[in-house]
Image 1 (cartoon, one colour):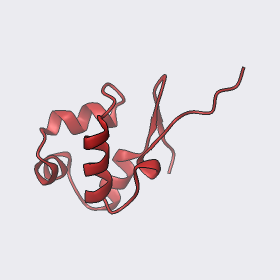
Image 2 (spheres, helix red, strand yellow; image 1 turned 90 degrees about the vertical axis):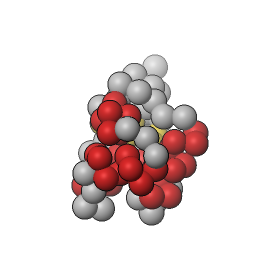
Image 3 (tube, rainbow, N blue to C red; image 1 turned 120 degrees about the vertical axis):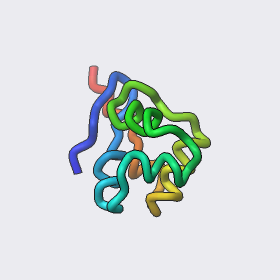
Length: 75
C-alpha cells in the first residue's frame, strides 16, 4: 500500500478502509465522527488525535503504526 504523504505524517487510512469494505460514512459511524473527519484525515488535511488514531486502528483491526507513520527525515 502506498501511503499518502503530508509534511509531518504518512497515512494509509484510505487503503485500509477500502480493504475492509467500508465507505467513509460507514467508518465514521462506527467510531462516532463525521464522514468529513474521515475524509480530512485520508486527504492529510487533518492529523488525528491519539484517541481517534486508536479508534481507527481498532475498528480496522490493525495497529496505529500501520495506519500512520512519520516520514523518514533525510538532511
